[in-house]
Image (cartoon, rainbow, N blue to C red):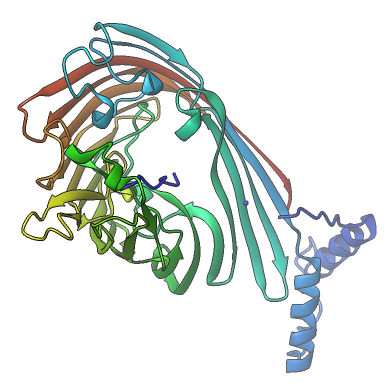
Length: 437
């Protein structure tokens, strides 16, 4: 099967109060009471409903739009004791570790870059029907055809009005609060992590608690396994007749939050070859994600366990969604596509020792249930761990070292590879608000 490509935010307006308004406000304040303790004027009569409506309309008309410009400049510099795919030189992704001895040359690499640096704009525009919220945000970390490059990469292009939102942002299937306070860019491999194009409806929200449902852009990839390169597979193309359907329920209190999310998708592939085989097929992908933040006084535990099949592209570091399954008993359809089961776990703790010092430590894992037609060196299991100590001289600056470890295990040839890295990072935040109060 041909691999399908994985597709991996307000118009500010400003209304300034006139000098006359300031004078009127000062006069009103003076009338409310005098410095010698004499009572102010009698209370005004309760306004009629029509007057209240008129006041509300005036308040909405006088409310001010706000534009927040924010981001950070960040340096990453470190040493890799082993080797990985050079396009991912400044990340620790188990899927990018060698699948056989010296796949990427000799061990030992120094790296440096500013690819995590980020710029974003958030807008808030009050209207008669509610506040419009938008976000447009990008970073410099190239992926896909730009892998390994320092180039623009869109993160969020999103808008909300009331319970409805549209654009690109976090999938409801994920919980961004699981991401720890680490400096390694890619993050825990077992975490559900995907910014996707979607339309979302949030019918219920109470503070940080909510229920949301979304239709998301579909996409998946397939592994031709031991049959890669066969002409019989060249005309097999992927098709996604429906959007992915995702939903989340989040319950938040002072102790933290608990979130349960799910997703379901339909995947099809069509055989366009006119030969004796029919390799068309379909599979249903699905997943369940249970995640939480638990506050332990000043510290925070970040936890997740997720399981599913055929939804690997929603995981932070996992390979293909569909694998080849042998079906030799049927000469017309000798191979099938199988939605590959996947398990991901995340367990991290952020330790806030003081305003100046923080630490993070934890572990993550991905495990794939491979199909029997996949190659012996196909990715089976990845492990990821790190620990750091960071110094914050001010709230908007931190710097410090981090030690990282990752391991890859193949499907059935017995080969494993690992990597240890030492990374130093420095981050400088900035923010500017225009308009508003």
